[in-house]
Structure formats: structure tokens, C-alpha cells
Amino acid sequence: MATLKAFKGLRPPKEIVKQLASRPYDVLNSAEAREEAKGNEYSLLHIIKPEIDLAEGTNLYSQQVYDKARSNFDLFRDKGWLVPDEDEYLYIYAQTMWGKTQYGIVGCASVDDYMNNVIKKHELTRPDKEEDRMKHVRSTNANMEPVFFSYPAVEAIDEIVNGYVKKNAADYDFTADDGVGHHFWVLRDSEKVKRIIELFAELPSTYVADGHHRTAAAALVGNEKKQKNPNHTGNEEYNYFLAVHFPDNQLTIIDYNRLVKDLNGMTPAEFLQRLNEGFVVEKKGSEIYKPDKLHEFSMYLERTWYALTAREGTYDDNNPIGVLDVTILTKQVLDPLLDIKDLRTSKRIDFVGGIRGLDELTRRVDNGEMKVAFALFPVSMKQLIDIADSGEIMPPKTTWFEPKLRSGLVVHELS
Image (cartoon, rainbow, N blue to C red; front, side, top):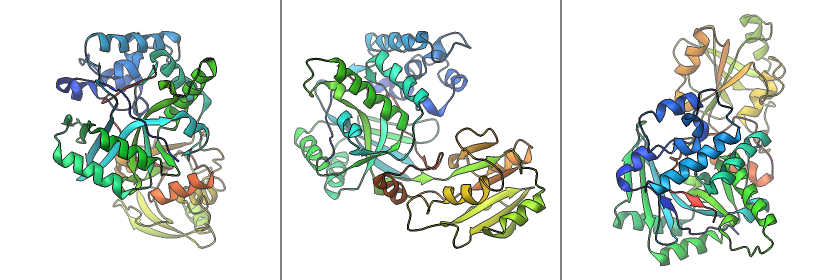
């Protein structure tokens, strides 16, 4: 059964929430963060990307960076830019994009649930990235950013959420510069909070949708604090970490596409001929072509789009990994034809989230940076859950969720 806990959040005053709320730390680099926070002293990027307040070229993993995160966090509290709520609450966080709104429950997930695999994962994590976020959590003694979870939709939870948001004005309601609407309610009705927590306790599992490294870091630091506390009771705040839980039927996964620098010594004609072994190849022309069903791909090569339909026998619809189009592409093209053996380490491949559009693929091939591009049909939430339930791990760069959560709407302190 899944644990959900109310907590006393730290939140910004309504007047500055739009300036304070930021994109997650891992969707922009230091230079982009520096530019995005320029002239905005309220931006949470000063805490989650604190190198922007240090000299350019500072080692991102030096203790100086984590110390700056701590001092900036203290500054935000001292200036009243992050203020503690008067009681423990759950929160409702809704996002509107492309005319669709999804509603998430903000609360604390359990470290023990992560350790015991009640919280299920579908991606591998890298130890260096885990350690970076662990140092950040240790330094701030807080979860500055929520992680993005999903759960099998529960009608009774939907009814509580829908009823509350219809009857109560949002505490925060703004549209970010990228056009995504963010709406946030403090769930002040203690009976509704209690009922949602009870309904979560009936769920066998929850699922990490996005933010595997932050999830691992938060859980590992909590477990670390547990091991170091001889008087540990299990009720301490460090036993929990900040998460937004969305019902699975409201989420959108968009395509995550691939670009390759060369054809591994083949001419375009030779490469097209080899592709026929695993695909039905159909020339589409110069207009962008987007795949519209599972096991269909589009490819851009030499200023021409192609449809690639996987031949029977190249996939296994009864296997949670074998059914994935990323698996087909790797086994039929990237590995045997292009000699890309490890998607995590190869310098010859790059990945582009579908939020950038397929014109980003044409641009990077046409300018000579890349030789060929592949567009994939998006993974479904059912595929993600099937893989997580089976204990398998998705291939790298498989899922891209939009919209991204804004960080800073609420912060969770570990003590």
C-alpha cells in the first residue's frame, strides 16, 4: 500500500510566485539558468542552480556550489520569499497545456516505500547524478523540487479534487512564459486530506514518471538520516520526500527522438537497402512526416522523409520491453547497422524531446551536424506501468513528459 503524507510546506507569497517558480534544475544548463534568472532575484534557480551566483567556470560539484544553495535558501526565508504554512496540508497542483489540464496531488511520499519498491521505477540512475542531488538535499536539508509520480486513477480521488477546485479559488494561478498555466490550491479541508490519504493507502504502487535521480537522492538522504539517528522513530520528516502524484489517465507522454552523426561508413543508398531487412520503407518526400501508430517510425535522410514500418518478427508485443519502438530501433538499426552499442555513452547519437517538434530534426540534419534522424511514436502510460510492474528497465531516453513541473510552488523541509 502506498503512503501519502500531509506536510507543512514552505511557499512564496502570491505576489512573487510567478517570478519565483522556475523550470526544474535538469532541463537547462548553467548558462541558460544564468540568463533565465537575470534580473530576477526571486527565481528559485538561485537555490537549485546556485552556480549562477558564482564565477563562471566554477566546478558545478564543488562544495562552494552546495554551500551557496544553502545560503541562498536561508536568504529566501529571511526575506519572506518562502514562508511556512500554518499547518500540515496536502496541495493540488494543476497544469494547463495545449487546452488540456491535469490535476496532481502534492504530498510527501515515503522513503520506505521507495526502498521496498512500493514506488516503482522504470529507468536506471547514474551514481554521479544521484550524489549531486544528495549533496544538494544534505546542504539545504530540504526537497526544493518535487518529483513527478503517477498512480492508477481512482474515481473517488478525482471527485474530491474536482469538487474542491470548483468551490475554491486557486491560491496561485499564473501562466508561465512558455504558455503553460499553473494552478495551485492549499487543501485546507482536513477531512478531505484524511480521505485522500486513506485512498492512497489502498493503492498497491505508485510510479516514478519523471525525476528518477531526484527521487533516488531524496530517498537515499532520508535513509542516511535514519541510519545516523540512534533515536529514530519513523515519524521524522526525513522519512518522507516531496512528490506530485498525477492519475495515469491524465498524463501525456510525447515522443523522444534520435539523431545520429553518420551512417557508419555506408552511403545513403546502402543504408536504405539495409533498412529493408527489418522495415517496409516508404518514401514520403520533403514535408515533415510524423508516425501515427506503434511500430511505425519516420526517418529524415538527405532532405527526404521516409516511413519505416517494422516487419513482423522484429518485435514482441507480449514482452514489456520487446514491444517498445525504442527497442526495435536499437535492435534493428542503431546497433547492427550504425554500430551504436551503448545509448548512454555513445558520442555519435543525440536525443531530442518531441516538445521541440520534428522541425528540430530537419534543422540539425540539414545543417550538417547530424546525418540521419528518427522520429518515434510516443510510449503509452500502460507501457510504462507494465515495465515498472515487471521489474524491467526502459531503454535510455524513452519517455518525455510535458508539461514539466514548476519548482518553488512548495518546498518540503526535512526537519
